[in-house]
Structure formats: C-alpha cells, structure tokens
Length: 331
Image (tube, rainbow, N blue to C red):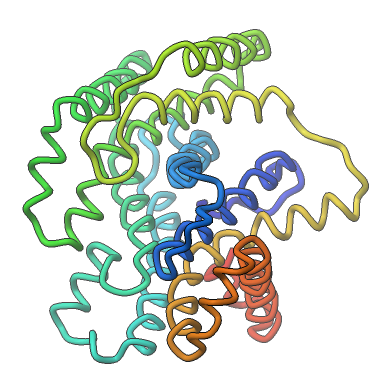
C-alpha cells in the first residue's frame, strides 16, 4: 500500500481490483469484531489482506531495492509518506478518544500503532521493513536472492517453532500485536521483492503458471497445520498468497473501457485511506448510533457495502476539500 508515482504504466487494473476486494475484507472483519454477528461473511479470507498488501508494497518497491547501495534520501522520502499518515490518523484517533491521550500512549501509538486506530500498526511494520531492505541493497547482488529465501524459510521456521509467538505473547497488547507480527509478515516483504524480480524475467509466464498450478495443488491436497501466532503465521497462508499474486500477474493488465479503468484506479488508490481510518469512524458510529448494530445483524452484507462505500466517499471528499494537497494521507 505504499503510494507509487502516478503514471499510467505503474497502475495495474488487476492489482487495484485486488486492493478493493481486500479492503472490503478488512472492513468486514473489523465490523465483526466491533459488532459480533453470527453471519460471519467470507470466513477467514480476511487473513490474506495484510500479507498481500505487504507483498504488493515490496513488489512495487523492488525497483528501488534492486539498486546497488540505494541512496538513503530515497528511503527517507518513502518513510515520510508512511510517517505523516501515521501521525495524522493517530492524532485523529486521539481526538475521537481523548481519554486515551497521554504521553505514554502517544509514544506507544507512534511506536506500535496499536493504541488508537489499530490498523496503523501496518505503517510501523512497513517503515521497519523498508529500513531492513534498504540495508540489503549494500550487499552484493548475488547474495540478495538467497538471502530473501533464507528470510522466508527462517520466518516459517519461527512460525512453527513458536519462538516468536512465545517471546512476544507475555508483552503488553500493543507491543505483541504489532512487533509480534514482524516474524509473521517479513516473509511477505521478501516474497514481494522476489515477485518483483520475477516480473522482469522473459519466462515469467511459464514460472507464474507453474506457481499457480503447484500452489493450487498443494492447498487442495494437504491440510497444513496452523502454528501458534497472532494473525498471519503458517505456510497455508503463504502458499495462498503466492497463488493469488501469481494469478494476478499471470492475468496481466486488463484492458477495459477508459472510464472503467479510471474508476478502478481511483478506488484502488483510495483503498489506502480507507484502510487507515475506517475502524476509528466505525467505533464512533456504533457508539453514537447503537441501533446500527441491529441493522448490521439483519443485513450484514448490505451494511458492509454501505459503510465501505461511505469510507471511499470520505476519501474523495477529503481530497477535494484539501485541494489534493494532502492526498498522501488517503492515497
């Protein structure tokens, strides 16, 4: 979900469609958490959201991470684009929850993103991974691919050994729900970089087709054990992410009408903003209008569609009223 340079070549219709679908899954699971409902829409598919977002972010960032000794000024500009939304939406979260505001919680929010507006931890994780992968650019190119495979294998080993989970689990909720997921998510950053390298290969279609077939076969033939973790541990989720990204890349750019393309591109771009603020507004909405919970129980899909659409409309309105000078906060 790192914002890219706005040129036509960089926007992929399939990826933007994927982002929109993932946003609906994210909003759905948070609606279910705040207002539990027997009709648990879409099952556990929500667990693919953050891993795919991170994979896509580092897929697009590979053009930088493939360089030799990448300039820190480039990384600093990327970090700023993550840090400013973190600070802004954290501030909004505290304005809506003033009782939580104090020096300790302010620092904890900036470091973990888990005091108010809990999805903001995603930005903290992205900043950390961006710094780690910048350091990798100082290694010789021949060592980078093996290193990314080592990161993936080590992260999966940590998943199944439970080392990371048992280390972070006794800590306070804000820390374990943020930094406790580093091990679970860093393999997806490496996966994004490897996919970025693969996209430049001449025989990428054949390799992607092989990935689609192999992962689909493995996911249907085997029941992989689920290791202890917070949200994103395990090899089944990892294989599922490989399948989805391989399939999306295999499809390639879809040529629809210019108006439809533009519509999808706009919604895909604003998905970043919806992800960042949807939960703080949802909490207040249910607090001030508790009867909406009954509406959600009766019509869960319609409520999900209505609320998510309203979040997208807020992004459009925010961008319009700020004359697009603060677009980096929502797209």
